[in-house]
Image (cartoon, rainbow, N blue to C red):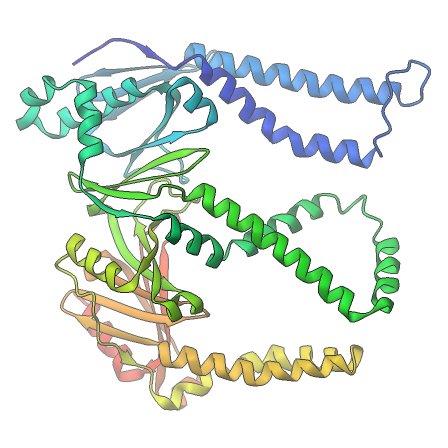
Length: 492
């Protein structure tokens, strides 16, 4: 096995520095805005020393970030020895990390803008013992050939019987094999557009906007804004509604663009008991997911997609670094016809039942799905009716809407036990079908209020390992006998 010392590409110094500088942008912007853009390089100006101090601090931080990036690039080395990937880094405190290749679960590739310009890739090495959602080792920027060499060494360690054949393969052969692996899913452009226009990304955009505004809470003249809004309200409700509609449309357009960029050319392939997911326009990502780490499958259908026969499939995986940082919830099929989804899942997991016949919540449990909502509805309706009369009386429509939503949730709630498999179905707004094997379930618990006990109903929760906190499926207000059946099934 090669003991040749390998280094990161020099571009990694720039990438590391820019990553550090990126975290400084918001604080610097807040300082500039809070100062009212009162900066001057005129020595006699009262703002001269403020300007020198601000840009001096920022320049010093930028210089330190650049020096830190260069130090990391110069001190970070890796090599292969005794069936391990070995890493050494650090200037004053030298750190070493040895990772046996047989312990490596996956190699995830990311290609940002700088990576793509220079033909590089960022490699994240994941093991089952990843902590805090972070990869075991991250190689910031290396050549694709070097990344393929790591994959080749990993294959050699995991497939000793095929070692002689693998030694004769070149990097180019590996690339060709990766490309020729069976493709099980590819998102067409029309499906991508449907995904972008029906996704819930608008909520993420609005919450991000709220987070940015909260950073400037100290400098926003809320009293003046309130008076302006009061005058604006006097103009008419129509203009207010028009403004709100404009904001929502703008947020929706932004969410569509973000979704198109993130899920462009979304492809799923299967190779050696692993799922290979590639996606991205500006930043290309490759996520590797071993089939044996999948803990559960979630099929999610929001009301619009349920009406049109589409669904989203999410896999819950044990440990590692998922799409969202600390969790391990990976979208397998962002948008797929439900029938095609079930057929594909049957091919991937033939031992599981993908057409469960659910045992539903009893009719006497229906009030429990909307009764609690009246606790917060009554004061809201009362406040709206009093302070916004007569338009506030429209809030009374929340009562029938809440009842209809509760009835809808009641019709969805159900479970099924089939051999070693538990399937649960429930909804808040989107219908979720969670399917898991008995050996993957970490715990099952029940809750029963005083009123539920009088009606002999009970809520059930099942948790599987996924990321840091796990994923829990909850079916509210099942027949008590059915809940006890689930407990009996789960007992050893």
